Image (tube, rainbow, N blue to C red; front, side, top):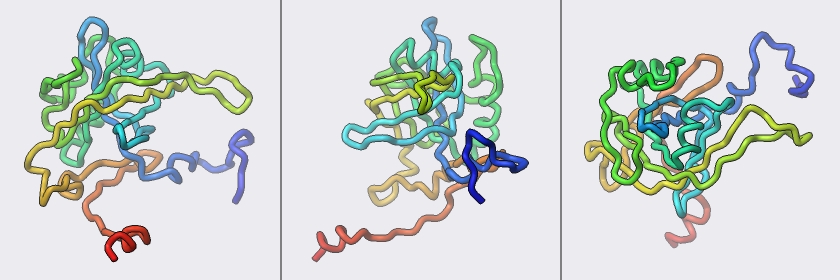
Length: 204
């Protein structure tokens, strides 16, 4: 089949998010101007640069995480994992301003080193970020959308020692969660390694 999104797909459910999958989940913690913590998962999230390391998440409306990150210039990415699925799912609820998703999900907070936003203490890895850019999205006709993209530079990385093996972060052991469209999720439990052609050249 072929369809133009502006004309509709004709299916019972939109396939877009299911095709662009799996997507890492950005479990974003922030504080508001009054220092009250907020926590929410975002499936429009990814790494966007490596030197320096940078992350970005998109909010399809001006929700608390986006508003807090823009207001304070800071946020924390917490790795969401299979053992933390229930807590992550609870934190996606529509909490009111000032209501703690950490408390609702039964999650302990851990202090960050550089930014004010707390970390998810149980997460095997967290990254403290400073906002470098935030902008409202536009479509091809230049119309402003309700979506916002927040880009942050990683200024601090926390890794639980148990998840470092042979000098590498043990991704499979951490069991990161991924979003796969609709209400489907996946868990990373197995990896395979493959060399690039340029890797072989460097080894010769």
